[in-house]
Amino acid sequence: MFGMGTKNIGIDLGTANTIVYAEGKGIVLREPSVVAKNTKSGEIVSVGSEARDMIGRTPASIVAIRPMKDGVIADYDTTASMMKYYIDKALGKRGGKPYVMVCVPSGVTEVEKRAVVDATRVAGAKDAYVIEEPFAAAIGAGLPVMDPTGSMVVDIGGGTTDVATISLGGIVSSRSIRMAGDRLDEAIISFVRKNYNLLIGERTAEQLKMDTASASVEAAKELDKQSIRGRDLVTGLPKTIEIEAESVAIAIQEVIQEIITAIKETLEETSPEIAADVIDHGIVLTGGGALLRHLPEVISDATKVPVFVASEPLDCVAIGTGESLKSIDVMKKN
Ligand code: ADP
Ligand code: MG
Image 1 (tube, rainbow, N blue to C red):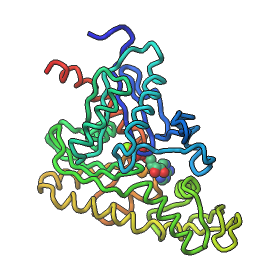
Image 2 (cartoon, rainbow, N blue to C red):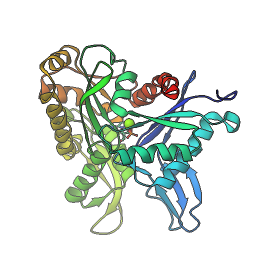
Image 3 (tube, helix red, strand yellow):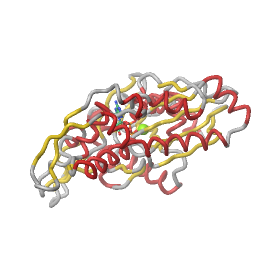
């Protein structure tokens, strides 16, 4: 039995965002997965949105770290500290030790899974369990995961795009590629550097992506151009330029094509029955990347399958992880 006030919680430990779901309450916290540390003492300066605003702006004495990279733990100690901070914040000081369900990308190694479980225990969990991200995303998107009907979910986060077909409570086939939101930002940075001799920061690129990027070059012609600031690589001085939405769309094309290839390959290896179910019900997109303009149409054109964006795509994994907490009680008895 666990004490008064102790709750089971679900954590979507994403590369870009960490979302905490408390049983009986729903989502109680949404913060960027960023930690700012003092480089000398190792002391944590700030966590979350405050730390994110420091990216690219830190003095030598501070470093802003994204401890999750490509969907897995890149910096173990910082991840554990970040999770501890978020668990405490979500539950309050007198919350007691919770049982925690954490999601991991599909296809991670046992070692990587172990690291997530251990970090969650270090962060204060009484015990920790993992759920595969696409499965959680599908639950959160309201797909009939337990039914004998195939569903396909594509979760496009910061570090990874996870593609999976699901039926009868399990993942039938899946792929996880390290091509998602961060790669889109990097593609924009490198395009702007090559074509305008302008160096822009990560946050500027991400903002440009959210404001004007389109998965379709054709449709981007209708969008307004945008002004961006950075450092001129020739003069070394700050500079503002105007960039066409069409150029931004061209910049990200390669990454979009890689995501489409992963979806096609996953479709190609599913059974004819599941493929037929997916044609009937469509592909569902989750994760922040699902919000990219014209992405559903572009994927649909390439695959000849209807594509939908889940409602609240950024929250699907957290909701699904939270829903699956019900199964913790079952697991504990084993
Ligand atoms: P993770 O699960 O890896 O933490 P999320 O599902 O939280 O990732 O999605 C974060 C990613 O989604 C980031 O790369 C962010 O730039 C991107 N994103 C968020 N909103 C939008 C938008 N409106 N258009 C395009 N990309 C977006
Ligand atoms: Mg995610």
